[in-house]
Length: 115
Image (cartoon, rainbow, N blue to C red; front, side):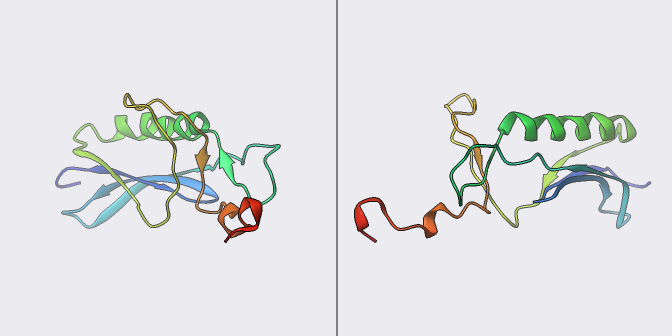
């Protein structure tokens, strides 16, 4: 394939997808898909939290699978349509669970009856 490849990642709600993308050739190749980790058990209703380590394990697995197929890889690109968050230390260490965009705790009444 002409031109450099990029590994494209999409961390979706039901699956983590990855593919080799060749922008100059307008081609997508070697599409891979892994199930997105399940939410952590025992959380209150309306909370959707996941293990950051489980998500990273899946992403690392996909990168390890695709990188040898694209030795000319110029980088990694990410989809940014939906979001979640992980609180981290200044060194990037996870300090919280991944809180998914599906989390609905902000729709609940405020503690103490305020709004």
